[in-house]
Length: 398
Image 1 (cartoon, rainbow, N blue to C red):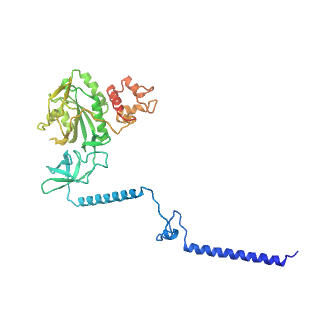
Image 2: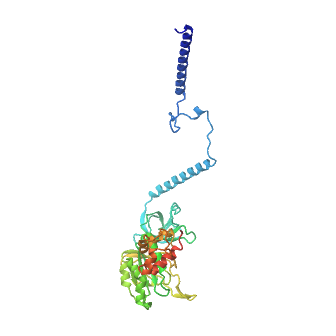
Image 3: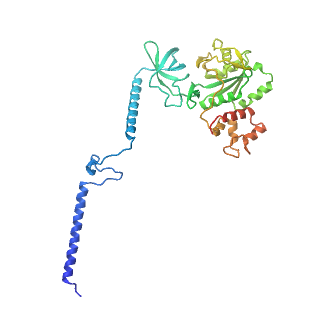
């Protein structure tokens, strides 16, 4: 049956109207796109110069409550960096000379340059605040200084250190004080008697030397007081086995002095050890005329101890080349910055054993199947070294 002409006309009119509306909608969409282009991915306008407020009616921008303080702090930090950079640039224009720090004081130091000594202050921009150390300069540092008309100087820069012997500050154990820098080796002096040899102290200084990049020399002084030579050899045997140089000396009788003099020749050596062990007397025997201060031994509460005779770190040149750096006498040197399970790495003979222990976190105290305890019982591991390890480990964080 043919279509009704009326229905056919209405259908045609509806179709045309639909096309017209679709065409109008496309034109409107195109016009809107031209006027208000869409944002790119990441909320970046196609036109960087276009104002965001022109599209969104000047919406208020919100920020966290403390954002203003943060921005002001960033601006202040940037200003300080620029100021420090300006000072550094100005300092670079100053004529400087390289020198060696041979003594230090509060905010000052004594620098040797071209065979003469210059008393120096420190440039204000030099600070140790951003380092793990509490002092800016130490004996042994190489520095750049500018000289004033009155013969004094100003340290402009501290050159990078090759080695460093440090110890915790007495008032803040989290920060280290550099005792000596750029030394080659450390001479650890302990007396056999008067005061009695303290092996744990020797081991603590050995650890400090290893961590600071110095070579340890173990010196047992006053061997004229030894009554049993076998006991002496058994005591120092662990250090021989570790390939550390061991020196047996007597300042009173001159024993071992030539060997010690050869060990010091051409090297910068830190002199360390407990008070009363005869360090100063020993060095005065090695080089007569060095005139390091000495003092008699005193009795206190039934124990033989030495009084402190060296009051500050000082460097002395040696006739055979090199220098000796005398440090204040100390009873102990504290190990810091090491965890309990890391300590074995600083005892080479124990480090090779721990891999065989049954437990990965073995304390080598009373655990079963402990290779360190087995070595101790069989005599492979020296009792003195094990005792030092346990004593030091007890002072460290887990």
